Image (tube, rainbow, N blue to C red; front, top):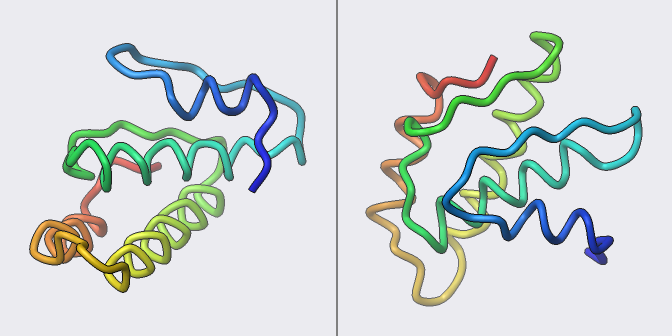
Length: 98
């Protein structure tokens, strides 16, 4: 995906908490999913170390669904840490996404 400069900065920022606030349809969920995906897969942060909040239960369920898909796709990649990624799938149902 082609990210804007601001989106890329949001995805790649490390060692600090961030708040993502933007208009509907601007790609917030996609950016957050990519940020979390990278933190899990590249930085080896367990999914249960995050606090992810959204405005609706439906949005939270969608985020969990997208994260599960991203983790499952990562499992298929050559050289993937399958033990770590499977653990993330086990932790996902109890992750703090609401």
